Image 1 (cartoon, one colour):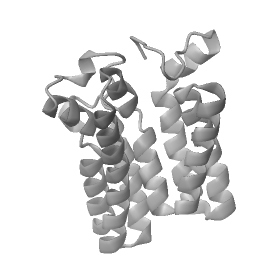
Image 2 (tube, one colour):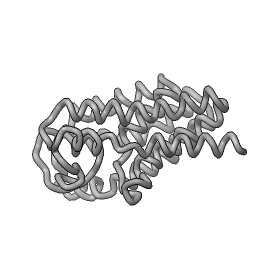
Image 3 (tube, helix red, strand yellow):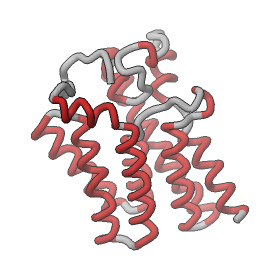
Amino acid sequence: MIDYALAIVTGYLLGSIPFGLIATNAAGLGDVRKIGSGNIGATNVARTGRKDLVAITLVGDIGKGVAAVLIARWLWGNEAALFAGVAAFLGHIFPVWLGFKGGKGVATYVGILLALNWTIGLIFCAVWLLIAFAQRYSSLAALTAAATAPMFAFAFSGPELTWATGFLSIMLFITHRGNIKRLIAGTESRMGEKKTAG
């Protein structure tokens, strides 16, 4: 139990690093939470018009998910790595440093999946890209990839990863509840369009 607790704390602390906020502040653009949707993730960072900052945010958010899983696996084993991955995701969306108001978790989810089972991680990315290019809705792409992830986890892994991806996907749907409402209403912005909320 001590190993699991350490894995959870490690995962949460890594996941709570706000790379989008750090990148925009370091670039002299101020607090990314004061523009667009107020989110700290790459989608909102993109509204600064700085592709380099988007890349830094994506690499950071994916990387912290990968790091949380690999560190926990190395120190405490495979089961602890699952706990660390879930904790990293929760750390991203509920970072203690930012009043528990973080990002929506897509990039961190990708990193966690790639580290836990790279096949499922790549499938998640493929589904995201397919929907994103076909429909040009980043949120719909993320929701579709998240909805299918537990099914692929069941097919290519086992019950532990299936339950973990199921939980993460439910949480991702919760973080995207505003996007879901706009998708249903037909008011969600497509990729490449300027947007002031969401």
